[in-house]
Image 1 (cartoon, rainbow, N blue to C red):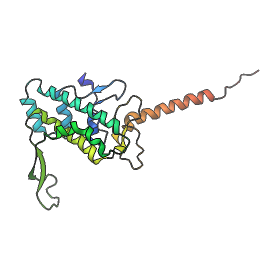
Image 2: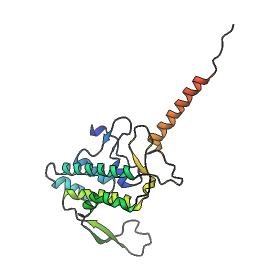
Image 3: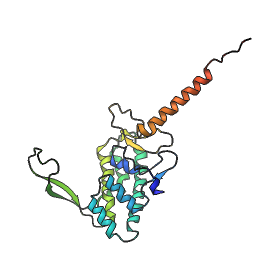
Length: 222
């Protein structure tokens, strides 16, 4: 049930991959974090992709079933992108992959972004050349626009990250993906707290079994 789910995972170091991880198998059974429109809004809020006031307005103004329909579209987008990532991960992404990104470009073409001058946030005593900054904002005309920041995060992954460093967790039955930003590109697990520790514990048990089988048996007295 929804209330028994763990919190959504943000372990990928890339928001586009974090969205792929909204369905995962953290232990034994798959968990879906986007079962409804409300789930989608919650995830977008935690991910910092949609402002709180926009999410609250959609909750109040959307007609019954409208947000759930967008959640279904987001799941379809997620699974399409998962197929793309799995096909290309582990190697640099070349220009010939562009044709396969056409569905993503079609969503991005709907975007209505614009720039605004807004007050600078942060410590008022902090030295800055100006008290105002340039900020990109978006027209949120309908619930369908909730797909736009998700698509943008996928586009950023495709365009700014090296797909050679995109990996799947090596944990047993784990489906989480991440981008390896470690210095030696040696990351193997979604996180040490999840699969890393379980793998270490299993390795310890395996070594103990081998040691028990090879340990000389003590002989009784004749």
